[in-house]
Amino acid sequence: MNILTTLAYEILSEHGYPVIQNEERDGSVQSLINLDSGTFRFELITGGKEHDFMLFLRMPEDIPELHRYAVMELITRINYRLAVGHFEMDLDDGEVRFVHRQLLEGNPPGAELLLTLMRVSLDVVDTWYPAMCRIVDDGLHPQAAIAEIDELSGYQGRYAGRYPSHRLN
Image (cartoon, rainbow, N blue to C red; front, side, top):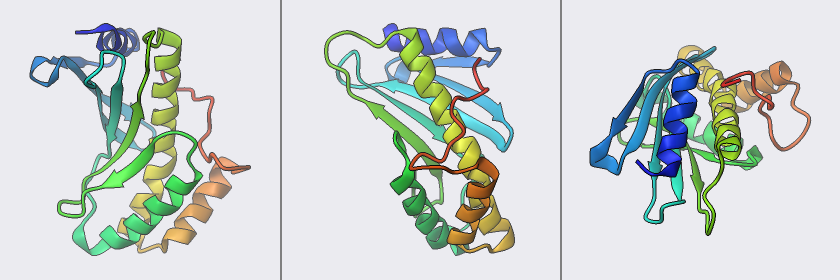
């Protein structure tokens, strides 16, 4: 493990999440994280340089084929608002994940920066996954799903999450 995966391992462990280290993927750190809207698969993978990393949060359910284009529209509209990270969907199998890539030169990030990025990412998926569910479960139009989340979250600007998050406190 390098400094980033070690920090992620420690942060997740300290907050009571079961952590798996995958040596086959350069020591990536994986966990299941329970949030209000579901259980998300977390993974932090370091890049080619020691201080570069990708943080993935996979949604609890794949999107059924019938709803993929509506969810794709939703994801595009959400991504336009986000200050950090983005959602992406595999149109072949419907897997949706939130991705944050960080390219850092020089000094590695400290625990505080990594914890902040993890908190923001968890908050983004917990905010927006219910909109995806409303499209799949209830046939809601993407713009209507966004309007519901805006109302619930008190959207006031470009970033529609509820940061600072109560997660990983």
